[in-house]
Every structure is written in C-alpha cells, then in structure tokens.
Amino acid sequence: MKIVAVTACPTGIAHTYMAADALTKMASKLNVSIKVETQGAMGVEHQLTAVDIAHADKVLIVSDIEIEQPHRFDASKTVYIEMEEVLLNVEKVFIQHCRDV
Image 1 (tube, rainbow, N blue to C red):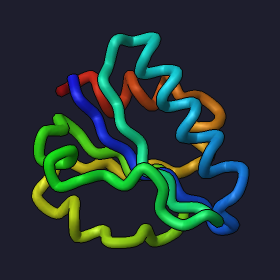
Image 2 (spheres, rainbow, N blue to C red):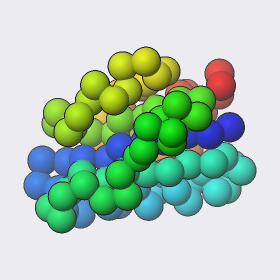
Image 3 (tube, helix red, strand yellow):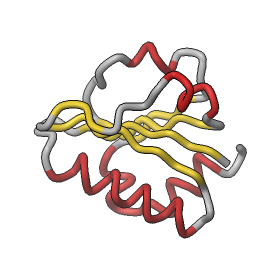
Image 4 (spheres, rainbow, N blue to C red):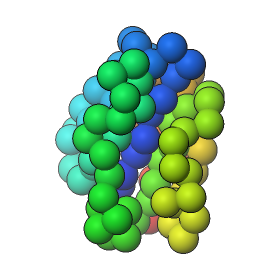
C-alpha cells in the first residue's frame, strides 16, 4: 500500500512535524509505504510530486487549515483528518482510513 500525506497546522511549527513523524513511524510499523509533505513555518518541505500522488492508493490531508495547492489531489482518493486525531491516536487513523485500500 502506498500513501502520501500532507501535514499543516496554523502556526506551522510543532504539530505539523509531530504529525508527520507519527504517520511515518506508524506506516513503518504497519509495513505501509508513505511520503509526507509538510507545510509549516519553513514553507513546503518534501513536496509531493505528481508521480507520488498518481501512484498513491490514498492521500491523507492532516490539517485544520487550508493547505497549499489542494487541487493537486482532486483526482485522488483523499481523506481529510483533523490534526488532533493523528496526534492522539495515529494507529486508529490508519485503521479507519487506510484499511480499505
């Protein structure tokens, strides 16, 4: 299974990167391929390419704010998740949103 994700929070400091780290660690634990783009105080880092998005089985948008360039995901199977969900129980997020892939 291949997943791509975008994490972003209002201040773009801690939560953006904490969520990216949590997703990456859980994906590794579950043997899921993941690439995470962060949109934080440092701007867009690890930007997802069109190829990354096209080959993904699912896109996770983990944000409580509007992300940059959301139209990139219009043709993808996309799930919008509140930041708090990932930070409090990332395993539950994977079970709920990535099981049907």
